[in-house]
Length: 475
Image 1 (cartoon, rainbow, N blue to C red):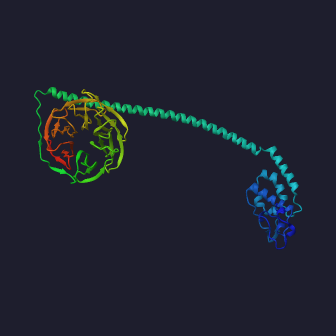
Image 2: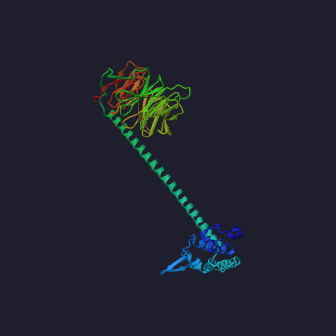
Image 3: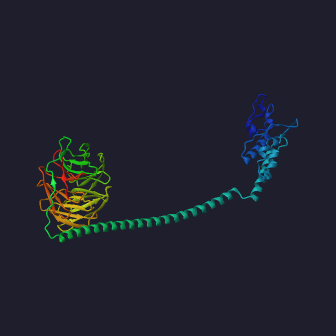
């Protein structure tokens, strides 16, 4: 204690008090201060009180006043506020020892040996009457271990139930998706059969040979769209707002024009290594992006209208033509004799078609387009055939074209089929059952044909202009 730390023989009248004042007895304040074993006994009494109450010693003033009379408080009474915080059990065990240790007269305080003996008696009493701290800790640990085990078992049970629910939910969603697809398929096939039956009835019910319906057509170009640069416009697409996306084969770029014919964004198309790009299809997607068929690289490139590359769909053979609906992106693979379908996110959906000349078979599929009825029209160039399918690839009907080898195709809002014939510089207008309604001859090669929101025919001239012709649909 402090007695060992201080040499009493070296203390003088000017020596300062050594130790923590709140724990020190009165003799530590004498002049000179007196340090001996009993000083540490006094401090021990304060330590017991502080340990039990968790309160720092704060003795009151030594003198109290009662009706003008000064009363000297004992050291024990000076600490009465702290002593009163003791519980009944703590007072029973420790109060006597605390009171004797806090005696103001050092000679009355117990010796260190007496304190050790009395503390051992208190310890013995506690062991015989109260469970040990170790036992309490063991019991608490045992209880905690049991609770953890129960929690683990409960968590495992919850995980198993959650897994079962997730499995059931996945099965339910799969069933719902399957039923929805079956409904869509049945609806599409129903509509296709109804159309086919109607066409058949129209043919059977007609007693007179059908006559070609003629259109008043202004053979003069009503306007051209160009930015004046040297280009080679090859294929194009028009969205519902009249915006044009045109592929410039010469400069390997895509040019976007607004509905007034003003050039906006121009962006380069990403090459596949050293391979040259050759555009065979372009279309606006349902998310207003642009899907581009690059035949030589066997891929479909998707860009934003700002020219930012989003992703590349890698096909198994050369790609021709692009058509888009809510189900995905449709394009021809001429070498594989099929139509492939991918989502706009680039995931393969399905494909249909095999080699041959029968229904659902192709010799050289080169172009695709959706009609207003939701049916998909596929141009088989070498077989001179237009085949019509549901969006799921179910064959509906077909018709032959006898005026040349067909190439690009588009469908008007009133259901008429426009087909380009580049080898004869013509565009043919057909009914949905394949009846030729009109032919239009051009000086330039109509590699691509589209209709804008006004029903005007638009086609690239193979150089730097888009030619716009007006059709007066009088039916």
